[in-house]
Length: 86
Image (cartoon, rainbow, N blue to C red):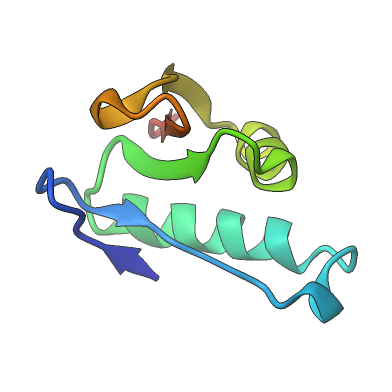
């Protein structure tokens, strides 16, 4: 879905139980959420991720997101990724 964190900018959020990993659902979720956000004029689409969450970081990069801030909000463990409409 989408959420509005304390900084006021709306971003996509997602999560899967471990039993659903490695089936491609994460990629489908990120792609669908990105398209939904862009259709609602959320441009660029934002997503934050814990720096140590390698799976989620790879999902975002494969979906066309780019790392915009490696210490978002001053937290060295929170990354901000952005994806703009093409």
